[in-house]
Image (tube, rainbow, N blue to C red):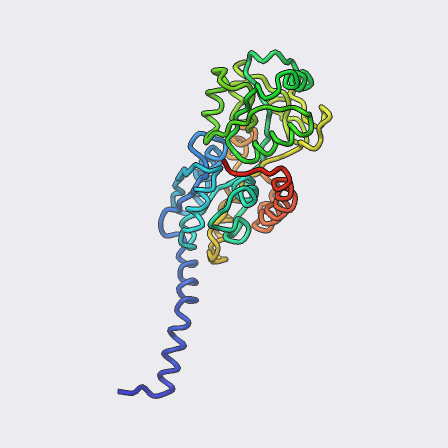
Length: 327
């Protein structure tokens, strides 16, 4: 039986409208089950700590649990790749850092585009980066450390677990005329273990990760890369104070979703993140760990997108200039 033309056109229009209607229904009912938050580094590191603080407090505004899934490896690019392949329905989001969502784009040949294959949800926090050494290092301050490194070229070894730390290490060598071997690690815990055991001489990492060892006297700190000293380690000067302002660097943490995730869902996730960061207990916990939450007016997808673009414009040419490649 042949359908009348009017009925045919009506049916065709209904079919064409289905994807839009299903997206609207998805957003209205979201979330109806737990949300998975991929963390691009192993458990126990700085990103994992922030993720757990956020997951616990995003549960109430979302009305569903937020489950952490740690996927480390290749400077976080494996976890980000998993997020890129996920369905854009809001049930898989990714907590990453400037290294995973900016620097890796110039460092690796990736099957995804760090700038265009994701939708920013919200920037979360920033944290200080620190250069530390084994407790038996004879240098008393950064100037003496630089002098020691110049006397021992290519004899010292420095461990670090993200591309941003390796990039900072290479810039440090270039600015100070020193040479040491850079040893890549998958996780901060392994770096700390080898440093405390004296298997490596130096490390660059988050102050949060190294703070317990610094307080216990198991490591020595020489400088932080932030614009100001950290309240958790006020006796540790900044690189700028020590005459190395080009080494000023602040790493950030943010939430992303796969490209194509409906705007209404992004809005719900962003609102949940904002509510989580407004919790005094969450802010206190982040402060205890050495992190500073972004100001309320900057906790927006637009801010996170701008951070990505600015980071790419600044660091991609430097990575290319230094010839930094995946090992």
